[in-house]
Structure formats: C-alpha cells, structure tokens
Image (cartoon, rainbow, N blue to C red):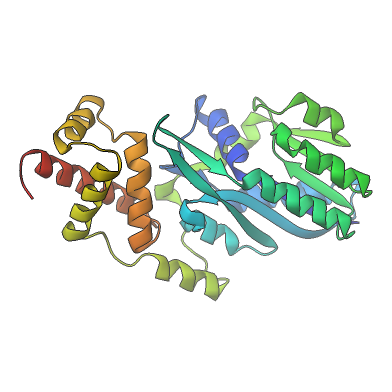
Length: 284
C-alpha cells in the first residue's frame, strides 16, 4: 500500500498557533517545529488502514514571496521524503490584506495526477479547505482512499469530512507545542548540502542605506503617499501598514532574498522606519 501525505501548511500553522495561544497567529515571528510535525505525520500514515503502508512522499504546500522559499521551507526541505511546493503571497493594497495564491491548485493537481497514474493507493490530506473537495473526489474516482486529517478547534469544512473515506483529528494539546518562536528555530543540519548552499546564497547582507532610500521612494510612489503622512500613521499605530509592509518585503526580497533570521527582519523594519522618518523631516 503506497501512501502520500499532502500538508496545507497555512492551515496547519493557523490551527497549531490557535491551539497554543487561543488567537489568530502571525507567521512573522513564529514557525512550525517541522521535525516533530513530520514525525507525527509518518506515524499517522504508518497506521492507516491497519498499517503496512509504504510512504511515497510528504508534500509540503505553502506560499512564498515571488515563489521564493524562505528559511523555514529550506530547513523542512532537508528532511527525507519531503517535497516543498510553493504558491505565492499576494498583497492587496486596497484591503490591506495578505493572501496565499495557488496553494490549493497545487494540491488539486498533485493529488489528482498521482491518483490518475496509480502512483498511490492512499492519500492522507491535512487541510480543512472545501476547495480541495474536487481533488478528493477525483482521487477517489481512481480508486484511491483519502483520509482527511484535521485538528481540534480548526475549521474543517463539513462537506470535506463527509466525502473523506475516513476522518482523523489531532487534539489541540498534541499540536500546541509544534509552534515555536523563530528565535528557537533549529539550525540547518546540512543533511542535503545543496539545500544548505541554497540557503547560504539567499541572504548574505543587510539592505544598505542607499538601497533603503530607493525602496522608500518606490513605496511612496507606488501608493501615492507623502513621507510625513506615512510616518504619522506609523507613529499613531506603532506599526507599518500591511500593504506598505508587503511591498517593502517584496522589494527587499528581490534585492537580497528572504530574511533568514528574525533579527534581519527587525533590522529591515527599523531601517525602513528611520528612512521614512528622515524623509518626513526633510532629510534625503
């Protein structure tokens, strides 16, 4: 019996964070303890349908800015039998929200194609999104049994539960420890040298003062803002507006790659605030 696991990482993180902190999570400062998650998934897969299954692969679905893997993705990639599949993070300047695009379509494609080509006998799907119903029913039409894995307290679509061949649910107490601060993230093991080199090459310096000045220019132009107004908003709310933050992250990532540590992100935000304040005060 060949088993593949399909993990909606956005759903998993949100459910784990809620289990630990009883509120909606922010992935800027926390991440998943992926080694523990993967171990639990392997155990769950091994016990499906009486046991005896052979794990084909764990598909890890998430999103990245400009489809670029972040340090957490690279660390997860180092584990055996794991394939990272990335959608893209999109920022809506009108609603000031951030959304993931393309993640569901990747799951639908992979699950359907693996079932169509009889590459798997059983699928373990960790998600709660009803949009994945089409993939579930398609896989079942090719003879694949689909087990749905949810988390206590997380929003799992009722129709998804009904259509699944079996439904399993992790209790909150089991998943709460899987969320950890970025500062506690384990260092790369180097088990896959190519992954470590890719991580090393993604980010090797911080944004310079000149680069940040040009980034501020681009953000002010793109959103038709005045530096004084933006600085006033930052002071009033003690935060950078989400649409501005999204473009800032994209522009910095384009130049340097994604931040590899929490301190890099803090440095970027501080440099941006200082640049906006200087511009608001008439300094170039």
